[in-house]
Image 1 (cartoon, rainbow, N blue to C red):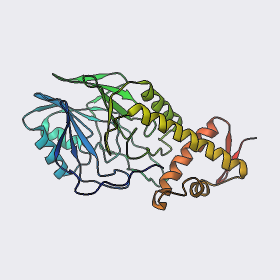
Image 2: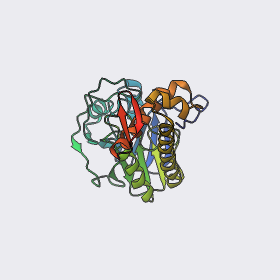
Image 3: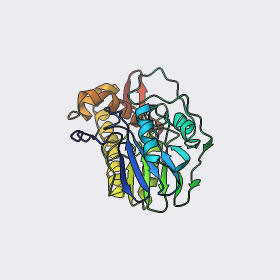
Image 4: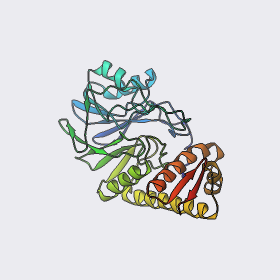
Length: 293
């Protein structure tokens, strides 16, 4: 599990940062091991009508900062990449403040007895419009096209800014860390297919929900695909030695990773094992995983 060290403080929390003529960013005050310095909310458009991407948590301080960044503009759409609670809960209160519609990913709540290592789902998310793959929202100087990228969650969308070649990648691709894939909703086959889809595109730059912009996106995605394939080979090699439980695999695969992150690594290992099982290459025997004969 690749993770960048946190940058030195102070972080630009609550400040409006201009990234390019059509894109501004506001950082939420919710840093954590899974959000880096916090959730980054993006404002798209330089004219009187703009869109907001990933409003983040329902935090009055962050909502005030977004509203200050909006200024005198009208918000015509609040777009959510997915419904983890560090991304979408701010949508409803921001819509109430601005009168904007909520558009983007579909609602999703997964019931599971398994402990979660990532953010839980937002049960209150209620979009006015669900965007399907290839559907667009438009403003006077911008066009945002939804790109379906399931894997991290089944409802995950990226948004392509057609005028500048930027792609808002949510949690699907981040420069600071690989994304966690948590079953039962997180799906490794879907995640790899979504990575391949993005690798085939020619986006100029990625703006993720957490961490720095990705200025060489195809190179990063190619490396992420290779990294996941390497992890798969590693699992098969270890299971060829002897059967393993998931949390017996993790210390051998992630020896150099902070032990606090091992539960998250275990979830992604489980996602790999489920996909290998689907392919008929491994089987589960109680708590152990073994090579299929």
